[in-house]
Length: 428
Image (cartoon, rainbow, N blue to C red; front, side, top):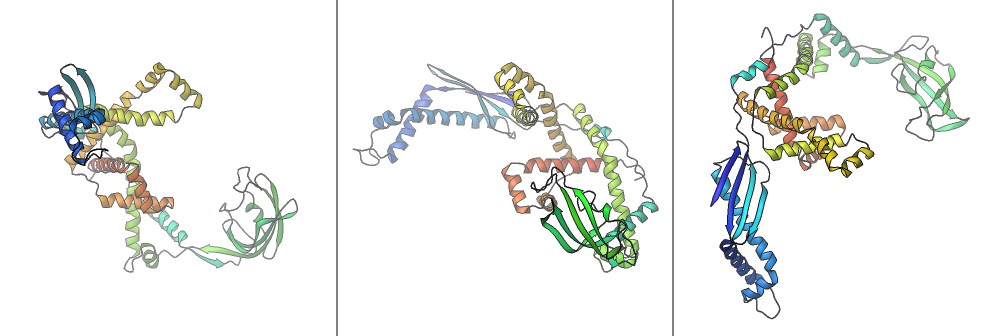
């Protein structure tokens, strides 16, 4: 007799008693299967007596028989839960061997019922977006023109900040030439901070053909340890002064920047306006998203699968433990009471995170929000490019670490919150 007791919509207990008769029947069946395959000296294959098999493999046979019986109880119990979505591994919480059989209790965890009514919209505040001014568009146009500027030989007599100095230089430490410390016709933008601090500033005011000796000190944390923290002298000759000439702000600039032969300056301005608007939206939305999430967690009560809460708690504990000193970790390891106290501090955080996950999942379905595999791949591809990694290797890493579902949930949450806030923009 199998009894299924629902603790709540996310947790259930399957209770049953396995009679000795059932275990004996299963033991005989398993022993027969072993006898067919076992190779035992003195017996022909498939002709080994059951008593010999039972004597040689007794413990293994009993273990497999009990395991099979428990699995049947679990399968039957899950059927009685009426198509519930099982989350994680079931847990055997009672296994009591008695004279007439074994009493078993198995806890199973299911996806909870999440009933979201229309009041979730009360959690979303109205949003007022600042206008995008013509001045902002013009400023961005200038930046684009500067980014696409051409470098030309300057007619200036002296070097100024912002100019490109074409220099020959030789570096010395303790009067000896530095390894890889010299170059010819090296283009250096003054004020870019490309060289060691103080190097570029000491070149300002130089004239073409002039040679200067400048002194600098390498930082203590400089990459090359053999020269870190040491003073150096450079002999620098200015060969040429170049300057950047911004591109003209016209249709040609739009064509180049937008990589579109049909683009016009008006198209570029519209593109810039939209880009600025999206940035302003992101800035306006950011502080509101956390408030929406807090409101949703407070508004809805949901039964939580105990195993998922425990998993989330383990993640939090792992992150928090990484912040502790070795002495603090040792103290926790040596004191069960302190370890429990430390763990208990984060139980509510774990529950809130799990609760929010189910709320977001339900709301995303209600709002028709999905994250496709293509979207996920594009985001991982972009992330890989930003980090200078191979996209396929990054995707493989996420898969191996089991991070794909987490990433998908984060993206779903972001899309959902953006949609809810978009609908609350005043004037739209």
